Image (tube, rainbow, N blue to C red; front, side, top):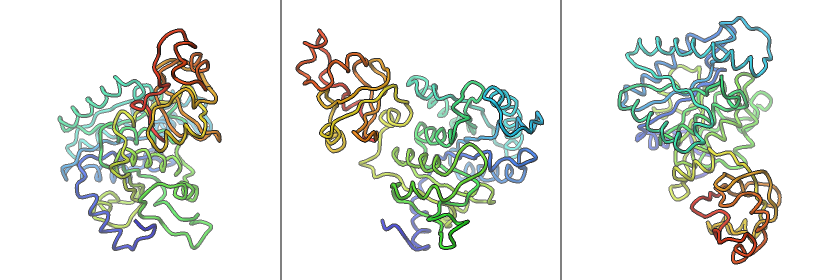
Length: 386
């Protein structure tokens, strides 16, 4: 697909790809939902109308919503610009009540029932709990309930880090096999350059593949509010694309923005999924994007080529250096000599044993360790190219 397409081509492309969409994840950030006076009523009403439109058109919907800390600040009359971690978590606990009360009444007026789901990263990293969440979402869909998800801010510091809810929404999109991730933000699209300083900057309405060039564009559009920026949204779109889904980044305060998207109008930026043959299936996507590495293996050039081109298992002979502290079965990342991650996987040996066998042939493992272990340090079934 060419990098630049005409407006008419863009409209036809959207209509063609969106006609089969059945399951949608919508993420909205605090920069959209809130203002100086707390929750922004008009925006909240518009959001409810948009989600009601999706439901009335026969689609299943999940909402990933930020805003608990901002609502808590308003309720507690906190004006100081910087809060400690414990203050942010306590503020979120107060704000989450108000946020869900608002949503409950908002959707009740549209004859929609809602459920609150609070998650931490450990819920997604634990494979059993990950699948339990998936089953819960399926049941809520069967009951016609609209799940509203947020990070469990009160017990999780991760939510208060940069862009966490963008990542959370992308992981939820792949968790429930949603067709599209819709990210509503306070910028209207991705731009070729900074539109405030470059009069030649133009919006990018269609992205066929998230390349380094696209990632670099993310610095051209940014928000002064919320915990996320355009970089985190592009990364979220990249995660969704790897799972075979579409993404859309658009202006959250524009009335009818989601309806405009499904009409094929050139609003925001529309991202296409990776090719079917490159799509990561559920378990490998979980390894690549949900699990956080406990350690790192620096590989020689030959091992990097084998992982990248052949989809091979990782043998001990290709390992140059071992970093971090991990046990057998833990997630690790494989790095090239320059320190760039080339693969992620679940390792078969603890750190101390990998240090002993690295650089050696697999046939030497029994002699070195004193027992017959796996020939592979990471088997290809547990290894994902990044």
